Image 1 (cartoon, helix red, strand yellow):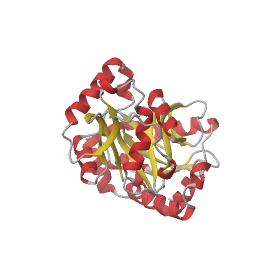
Image 2: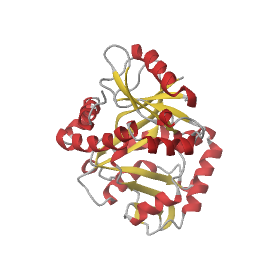
Image 3: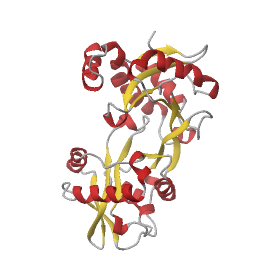
Image 4: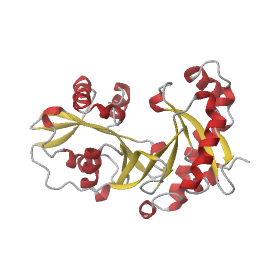
Length: 307
């Protein structure tokens, strides 16, 4: 029997980093998590019309049932909800998500998890199973993205160079410059393309409309973008702003500005009672160091179980 949204919320909360349980009361968090589990998790477990639309987009010709979510036993004492996903909505990058679980997975569970993924979604040739862990990792898996977060009240700027500032952006006039900044980093570090990419123009425009997009300026000149988004689906049930974008133009990199950006963004956002949370690829050591220097804590992350 498929659990209720409230039951899934409890399973999810029980697996979160202990530090985050001190930031927000459990009742508030359970309510937010239940909403996320109701839609999309449970909706995608029963709605064949949505499943058919997903097939049409990602795998034409395959049965609609192959895009449904399933709540399945994985060994004797573990159940997981598995779902078919695609990195960046790219049909060539399929993977299986197995985040909602009755308990934290261990190395001993990995063969059964892989077997379930192949049995249910093998028709799509998924590359890996994505798992969640509040710990640093699980032997037998590979690191994916880590979540870095802190209450905005704890992210206070200090020793900020006087020339560095964030100014609320009214639009995405510098989008092409931001793309060139990403291109420059990709050229210098080819692996960067797998770690981060510029958000769509439409997404940044949405942040601008909501007052959550900021121009990073140095001596009054545009130097990059910092943006947030109000998105509970990626916030682990926390009342949070999620970091949507943070990029410096090449000429301003290497000056120590990056370590100040999280705190500056946090203080520029409209609701100081929230948490600032964002994901950073485990291999992006520079971004991880900058986030931690600013005061954000590593509160867990996704892992990949190769198939």
